[in-house]
Length: 215
Image (cartoon, rainbow, N blue to C red; front, side, top):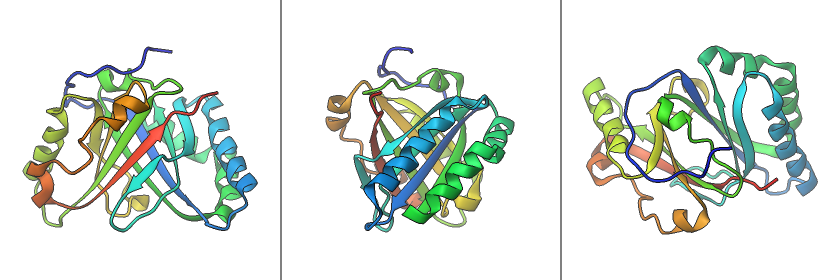
């Protein structure tokens, strides 16, 4: 495994590697053993040939005005075709079907990331902050590019891009992941709000903190 992420600015050039974020809301009365079985089933999908990286587990925090999620899956694939193969794989279909009884809600966002970001595979014990933006209706491509540029000008190791799978995204169209060596570095990062320049262009934001589970 590569070392944990260190801070530096990244290029905004996108490549073929797919970032796949899935958010789950477990039912409040769900049997904890059933929820644990769901997480174990999701993590078992890391063995599929099309998967470059996959981890799933409970969220540390979910900050949103309207949405509440309890668990997250983060995965990477070499291409959109590999993401499609993963989605259709019988093992994935089985885990999805078995998980439905314990879930109240689910949401997914996908984007293409650049080679530098794709090289940052989080190791167990490292941390991630995922930010998803729902933009106001009627924005042009220039305004969208401006918001993406905000992510590219931060001082953190970022993967970011525009969602290409709208069906399960609840209208959220911009995603980013900031990587941290551990929980301590995430806790001292104050960038949990929408960047001031982009506030007028975004309708809402979801901020998710996630600690990569130890084996």
